[in-house]
Length: 297
Image 1 (cartoon, rainbow, N blue to C red):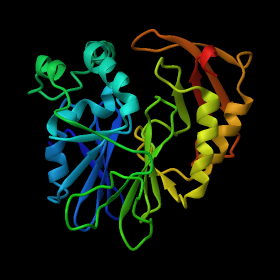
Image 2: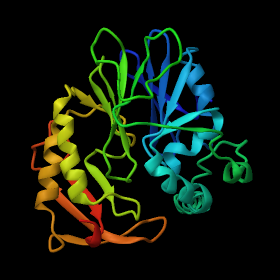
Image 3: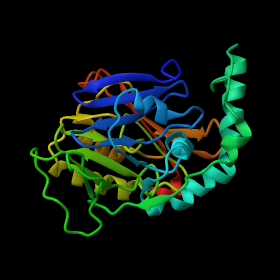
């Protein structure tokens, strides 16, 4: 199992569990509890990879409902997600999984490579398997990983965040999907945005939020002391620089500066905008690119 998943320690008590499909799940280990942010494609049992790192009681959450983030939910009894992403999850669970598998097969075959999944992968079981039980997150909800028992706040009277307790806060920022959630670790000052914040931003899906909504909601991140960001599709911690730079890129975006774009798996059309950074980025990355729909700007 460790050979399939690559586990890298990103900071004290912070691990990234990366899989061959090109996506990472994040594991935060507290004193009394641990939290797994996203569960990957589900081609292999990610719960076994988690248990090579910690035996603490585990809270499992999804940043959104796409299969590369929620496909491994089947290995856990309970998973927390924003209820606004129920439709996204159902669409991917019921219709997109065969397309995901077929895309991997065609790309790997063209490259002369074997299957992306392990030898014991049961494709039909994967198609059929879903989340055993969802619990619904509330915006601003906090989870204390140093608490002696598994608990969470289900009212709006949340624990006051401080470095004396290990709080993880759920921050609802509609963007990549309407139900996208970022998780902020108040102790380590690391933001886990899933696919909702990175140098590449995919906003052309039918269930993506309008660009202007996302642009405005990003401003709320300025109230947090964010020192690093760990997106799901990168193997490095990013600086918080992108939090202010992304809204600027959206402001610069126009159809005239964009080209037509088609999703490589579904063929879903949209537009692609690229902004060259010319050495601006402290992360050593040279471009921001955004996919979007004209009717969702």
